[in-house]
Length: 73
Length: 397
Image (cartoon, rainbow over all chains, first blue to last red; front, top):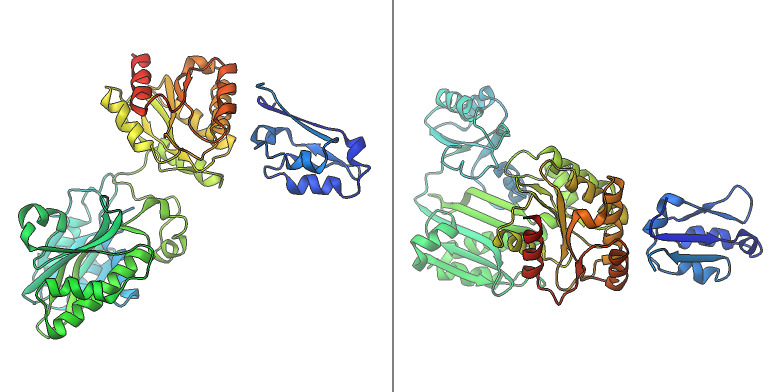
């Protein structure tokens, strides 16, 4: 369980943008996202969440669909 | 990282530096055969790394029978818990004129320097006993080495004509090799001028800058260096091997070679090149470091976590000090996450186990928030390295 970061994904938003799920998987430098079984959706890889470098690339890709929360603030 | 002499000679041979006839024997029988093949008196050198073995690891014998007996004895030497990695069997050159050369970095001018003397020996030692016989030239680590520097050096040794040309070629070749392979030191302790006028290298040692071991991997592979072989002066402990494994298994960031000491203050230090200063600062204030372990270059949270657990579970260690240099580009927040995660996974409260957390680094504001949340004492660069170390030592009691 991550101690410092939480990543919330709203797949109902991700699914509406073709290619967005693939982009999220691609842009994260620490592999927090992986393709979900259902099409055009992602799952959060919990063991990698604390590695988040807060680069914001995922939130830039989907400002509404992904939220990164610092648990220490 | 110290090379065995036979490895250094492999590099020199590749760069066409003239060498004395020399072969590596793995057994006493092989040494006998090689001595017989070379003929006449030979020199045997046990291939050892541990310091202080220079005299004990060398024998001069007159024939092959003597070589076998001497090799048997040399192969039994204790090389810091290891056995010697073979015996170098070398012809004994008959020349009378001997020189020495040394390539290293001058910490004052921050440039490479080559020093030479018209006598055999280690230049460092000759500097104490015969400083008047040493000549030096600095050169650039950025621009290609120019032959004129080698020529100036050779001229300073009062060499003329063919001697000057030959010495220039050797010095230039060695300087290029020194730069190409990221060597920290290259000492030719004996460069002999033979009766026919040619020079040959007899005794040589080389050290690789340890941080260059990754980019020098092709050369190390060529020499047969195992990846985990850090050429410590003694056999690595299980603690040190585990540190190397943690570093090797995750390419993000670097844990410099970890060394185990017998103290009680665990150190997770570094970032920005301050690890040695930080270790010294702990010692200066009477503390006894349990280890040396520099972490930097933006390690992953997981790497910092694993290092923390390794240090904190070392027998005799109850608390750790986490400190970095005044200026550091390493993400202090990621290190803080890793350290706290490691401690909590061991079932402890971070505040109980961290003596001090000196946070200078990138994202230090986030690091401070993390540490504050877990009640860990932290300080920024307004607290000197020395003062941070003093506080850590004081707290451990």
